[in-house]
Amino acid sequence: MERTLEMQLEESIHNPGITGVLCVDNNGLCLGAKGSAPLKACGSISALAGQAAKLANPNGPTPVICLESEHGIVLIKKTDKLTTALFKSS
Image (cartoon, rainbow, N blue to C red; front, side, top):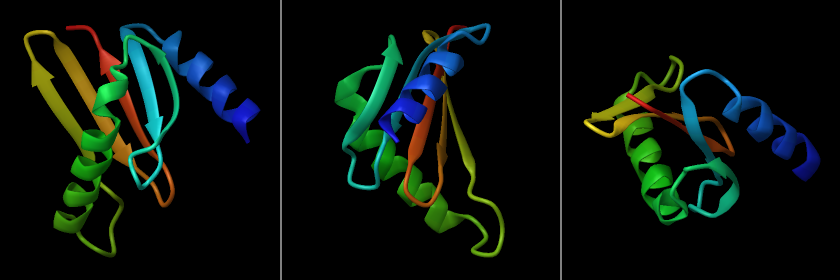
């Protein structure tokens, strides 16, 4: 699994505008990171995705969270066992 995750992280970081990518488990443990993704944000990203999932329609897809600031954009998506955050430059 680590090899597949590593390949996906590497592929994601090469998309235009992506400066970092971070994958965490449901407990906030970092499973992988590339680029400028801040490792200290792992727990917060996992918690934020979990809270947003509670607000969404239980029969619908999980939401994509978009955080915007003057420094860039962070897109966060939670699946059953994994939360992924993409950091984009503005």
